Length: 253
Image 1 (cartoon, one colour):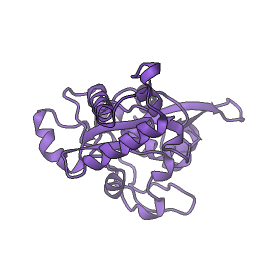
Image 2: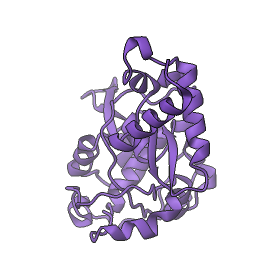
Image 3: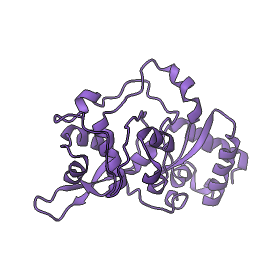
C-alpha cells in the first residue's frame, strides 16, 4: 500500500501533467491493482491537495468531468502576458445563442430564433457543435422534427462549473459582464495559439447582429444582456450528460 505522501505526489503529478480534468476512476487506474488506493483514500488526498493549494498561484478545481489543476483566476492578467495573442472574443449572436441553450435546454434552433427575433446562423451552431459545447439530444415532435440542443459536460468544464445548478440565476443577471463574473470565465487557462473560431464578423448572422440588446431569457424577463465573454480553450473530455446534481464526487467514481 502506498504511503499518503507518495499517493499525494502521484496524484499531483498526474493532474499537472495531463492538462485536463481527471475523475477519481481515471486517477485510480494509474495504479497497479495490488497497489491501488481506495476511493476514500483518493478523495481524502485530493482534499488535502486542494487545501495545500490555498494561497498558491494554482488551485485544484472541481468541474463536471473531474479534478483539474489550473492557474488561479485572479492571476490571469499577469499569466496571460506569456502569450502575445489576445484571447478570442466571440460574436454577440453566438453568445446569445449559447446562453439560451444553457438556460432553456433542450431547445430547438427555431425556439432560439423566436426568442432572439432574428435567424440563427448555421455557422454559429456548427461552431458550438465543433467545440463540443452543445450536442443534439433529440428531435422535437413537430413537423420537420427539428434537432433539440443541450449543453455538454465539456461546456461545464470550459466554464468552471460542476453542474448546471451552478449557473447564476437569471434574476441576478443584468448583463453579460455580471454573467462573466458569476461564471468565473477568466479561468487562468490560456491558449498559446489562436483558435480557429470564426471572427465576430464571420459568426454574425447574415441578417445582422445589430438587433436590440434586449434578450428575453424567460417569458417575463426583459433584462438586457450585454454579451461580452472571453474564454480560453480547455482539454478534451467525454461528451456525457451534465445534469447530475449530485456531482461531485458520486459521478467521478
